[in-house]
Amino acid sequence: MAGRFHRGPLSLAVAAALIACAHAPEEREVEATPRDAPVRAEVGENQTDPVRKTCKGRGPRIPEGEPVSGVVKATYLVGADGRVSEVKVTGKASALALKAIQRFIATCTYAPAVRDGKPVAVRWRGELDFTKAPGSR
Image (tube, rainbow, N blue to C red; front, side):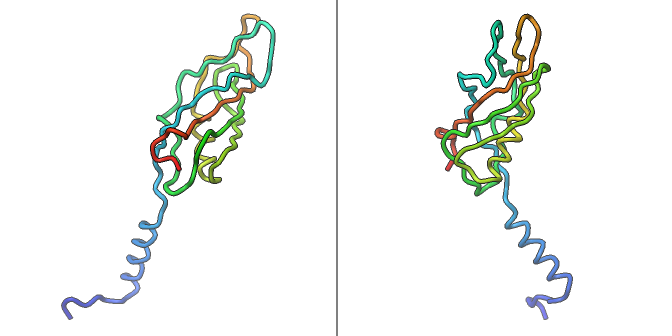
């Protein structure tokens, strides 16, 4: 019996688990160049623009095999506290890649826009450039 495989329920469960692990999409962090578009969505007099301070990671964590290319555009709300919310993204990417980009943008913080000396919330436009990112497709 040496050298033969036992074909019981346990070995089938182990085989199924190994197959599932082998086909699970692996996430990779894609480095993209975040940049704010020069045009703000809300224009106000005596207002400064919000300024991005930080984002978690070097880029979105896009599942392996999910295509993304070119420039992905985003619109979002930068709150008076500098937090990002209401993120919407569009571009040449799969739905899973767009969701990962949306989650990444939501991790960013800003010095908020200031109008008449007070922080204010504004709708803002930004872009992620995947044209030069290694591993982008």
